[in-house]
Image 1 (cartoon, rainbow, N blue to C red):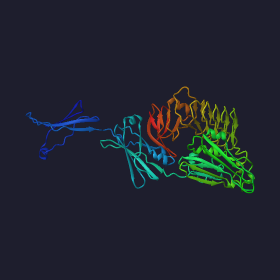
Image 2 (image 1 turned 60 degrees about the vertical axis):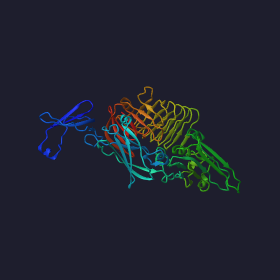
Image 3 (image 1 turned 120 degrees about the horizontal axis):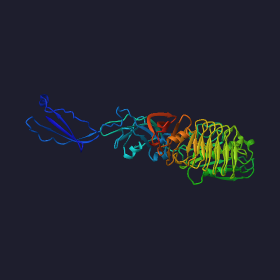
Image 4 (image 1 turned 180 degrees about the horizontal axis):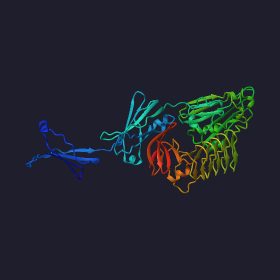
Length: 538
């Protein structure tokens, strides 16, 4: 009789087997161990004995490990999620220099020391990255992985699989495409308000209307450092002077320098040169430069000069690598926006308490300092409150409301509105009717804080991308309060952001909206659609 004894360090698991004639002939016996074996490490040895009580010496000790928990679950179909924050809009040189950051959502069967394998493919070659799961990552439910390898410019697809030492594997994750655009390109400058002409990077500015302004600049790589507008010139004219809003420039962290050269009538043409740079000498973000460029105009009435001076006006945008592009002003659909009064759709307040009211068009209202009341009216408006306790009323249209700090009140009104908060001192946020977004400008918010202002009728919270990372804490009661009747909330962000939703349950269902993939969680009666880039703590 063969007796095999397995031990887990505490208990013996004994299996006996009677030797058959066939096994004697073969010289070996196949024995299936009896008992139930939990995951863990075991040692085993065998002894052969006969009916007379004679026994062999014990066999050599054989260790083995039981790992019946598969990253793929009982059926092997459970799959991780894969997200790469930089994939949205392409991975530029700065992002590539820090490594391509992926976030893998772990399956319920993932255990300590399981291995994540991410395979990226450029259509010809595989780029394989492996990562061993840590205890902290198990607790968080996600693992941050920097992709290994050298990635040239081009399009890639990527997938993740989780495996363990026993050879068990999960199903593959979602296939995630990404594009590397690491070769720095010059900023795109345009001087024309008849069309956007394929402005590269304009997708990042989809909240404001660029088509109605004379000058525009966008830097795909995010390293724009200066924009220069030079007036058209003719010997037959007196000096013309470019102007822009210094108050708005200061609010946006920018500065304007204007050099006017009167020339010599009939001999040297007069010129005006307007230069925009960041106050801190750093880079200029795409939204700020385009908001300020909309205020650029001449200090004189130049509408009658559209065929001469205006057509000679030039905008040049330069990045930190010295690359630049220029564009001459073409035919304007509305030349009056460059007249002495500027674009009448732009209204600016003072340092006092101002009331500004928009029109039926797409207006831009700037309160600046003071406790201001801004009302957009109809149209897709941009309202920026500035310093002070402001009231921002979007009214009708798809509006962008930016508080600027203080005890601000946001009323989105009718339309798909975005309300941007930069601190937690706001009084209230009401999205109104439509699909409305609360955007966090580099801040963390705990909605379990009883001192927080009220938030209602919100369909989405955007934690932002490209910053150091923020934390959003939501409770069942908070989500119920800030959403409308359908109790559904979308939450977006990037790999550096953390979402705390204690008590939430992942359903395993994913939905793709545009370029973003969301994982579904339930929190009480609420339906949460969570960007797969986020680090989620339940």
